Length: 190
Image (cartoon, rainbow, N blue to C red):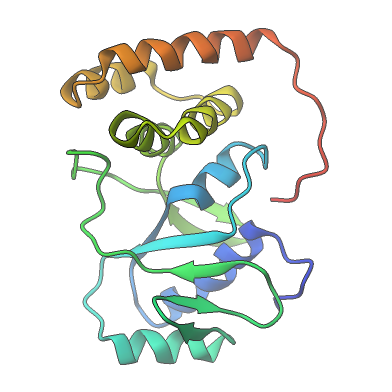
């Protein structure tokens, strides 16, 4: 696989995950990149956040990323042939106050990639809505839940622990409205 200007976010995720795995670095794809994948491209992120679960020095990470054409620019890695960039936010892997996150494996372009589950991706977007009143994240959570099976009971319980039961009900109302509308085909790449 080679990255080009036409590579999708999912292809970039697979490319980076494969390089990290070759170097025996365990990392989980999180954030907007997961939301892009789970929303079938209805939401589009330009960055890929991988939370490292292996001890690695910045120099080792730089070497792995450079081996696949990414160069460090500040706190992110950029590739000359794709608009997508990669960041490695500090761990631990968590959503709101919950740090007991269990990533799942998904196959992207034949590569096993550790990612947040669809339910956790939805919660991740809702956390931004709950704590920072980020309305775009609310809409993105709806898009994830509209396209993927998520555990609404688990999200409801977690929302209560985050003191956001009222905002969960707002999310649920918007989701129910979105599920009534037929999806419009789009030209988004994933």
